[in-house]
Length: 128
Image (tube, helix red, strand yellow):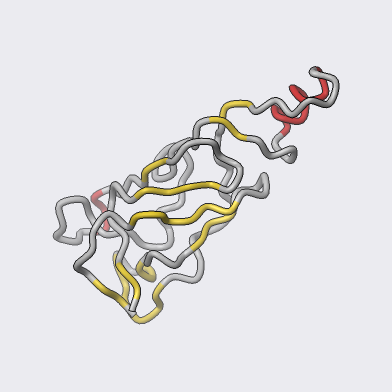
């Protein structure tokens, strides 16, 4: 059984240089101090905050800064671009009408980064 993820959970991107936290808005109507998350809590700058500096060459700002530095990798500020929901989710447990987010879910950034949950924010609620 996996752990349910709530607001304040710690996230890490494979191309990010700093951890970030998950923000869950109260629309899911789950009685928990921080609110439980579902797979649609994936909006950049709303649910997913920046990961410090980005080092992905697929990021246009990193590519242009690296070209200007004559090929020396030059990280630039992270602005996540999230094209889809968290996967796979927990289809047997719904939160706000969507599959619940558990600590084994992953999220992909359009610049190639894999975002994972490093700390679900709570340790008592388990979901299948």
